[in-house]
View 1: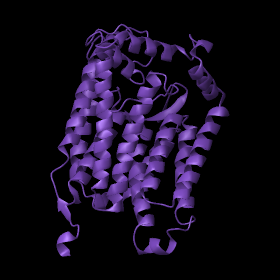
View 2 (view 1 turned 180 degrees about the vertical axis):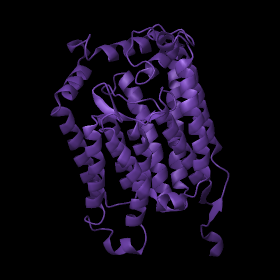
View 3 (view 1 turned 60 degrees about the vertical axis):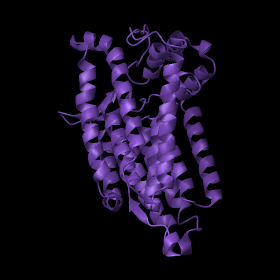
View 4 (view 1 turned 60 degrees about the horizontal axis):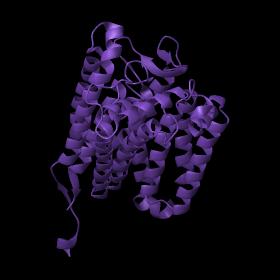
Length: 378
C-alpha cells in the first residue's frame, strides 16, 4: 500500500518551458529591432535606442529576478502574499498622485519614481494571482473546508468582493483589457479550485455582465465595439489602427516579406512597438511565422496546465493555473485584436512587445512556474 501512495519528489525544472520562453524572447528582440529602428531614429537619432532600452531595463532584470523566483520558497511567497499585493495596491493608488502618476493617452497607469518608471497594473497580474492562489488554497483545502466549504458566504462572496476591489482600481485607470485578463484568470483559478459548479456559473454571469456594462455605458468603449463590428463606420478614426493592422497581416502572405522588410512600420500603423507588434511580425514572417508564434503560446499553455496537474499541493496547482492563464489570455487577446477576431485591445504581446514592466513580470511568472515544476508527484 505504501508503494502505491503518492509522494512529492524533487525533479529538474521543466526545460521545455525554459525553451519556449527563450524562443519567445529572442523572437521579441528580433522583431523589436526591426520595428523600433524607425521610431528610435526620430526620437534619439540612434536606431537601437528602444532595443537596448528593452534589453537593459526589461529582459536582463526579468531574467535575473525570474531566476531568483525559480529558487524562492513557495511557502514563503504563500505566507506573505497578502503583503505583496498590498504593496502593489499602494502603487496602484500612487498613479493618481500628481507628479508621481504619469498620464498618457488620457489614462493614469504609470508611476514615475525618478530614475525608474513602471506600470503597477502589470505587476498586479502576478501579485493578484499569487494572493488569490494562497487565499483559494486556504478556503478550499483542509479541515476548515469540510465544515464550511459548501457555504457560499465562505468562498463565493469573499471571492467576488476581492475581485471587486481590483476591478474598481482598474476601472478608475480606464484599463478594461487588463481588468478582463485578471478577472477571467481569477475565474479559471476559482473553477480549478474545485468549488461548487454553480459558483462558477454565477461568477461567469457576473463577470460577463459587468464587462458588458462597462462597454455599453461608456460611450468611447461602445463606439469601439461598433467600429469593431463594422470598420467602414469610421475607417480613418477608431477603425484606422485595425485597418492598418489587417493590411500588415494580409501583406505578409504565406512566407512574409522577410525580417526587417515591413512597410507598415514606417508610421502607418499606430502603436507598432506595443499593441500592434503582432501585425508587423505577421507582415515580415507571414502566415507560417505567425502560426509558429501562436503554436509557441499554445505549447506554453499546455506546459502550464501540465505543471499544475503534477503539482504537489493545492496552492501550487492553482498558482500555476493562474500564471499560465494570465499570460496566455493576454497573448490571445492581443493577437485576436490584431486580426479582428476581438475588439482592439491596448495590451502588450507577452515576451514580444516593447515595455519593461510586462517583460519583467512575465519572466518572473515563468520563473515561478519552473519553481513549481521542480516539486511534483511521482
